[in-house]
Image (cartoon, rainbow, N blue to C red; front, side, top):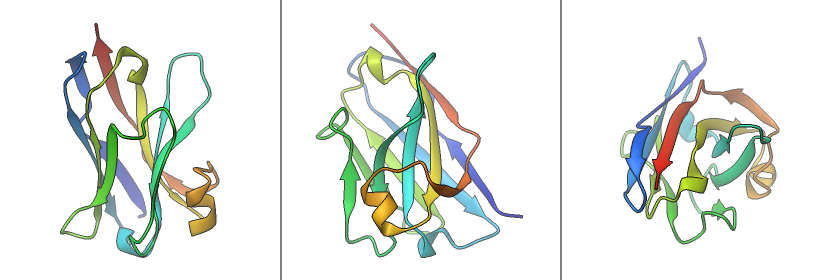
Length: 125
């Protein structure tokens, strides 16, 4: 069974760091581009970061550029999102997903082949 599972979310204070993990089962995550998305209450889901299939390229939304970093784990079936200097506006449910192509990854597109169930990140001021 193809499955993506996010972990690492929580309730944190302004300015702290968190690292989210996306773990795959049932398929080789290393064979896919992987994106991170988030959905805040009352807002649409948005793409915030993506790493290309060959790991050569990473992409970030302006809202997180310079603060968040995407990477693959040494075990190829994991992808991380390092989130630094968190702000209250980063509060959202965070999802990982597999974009259908590297081009869609570069566009932070929601056209994906699989979604995880999400992990809540709440940043208090």
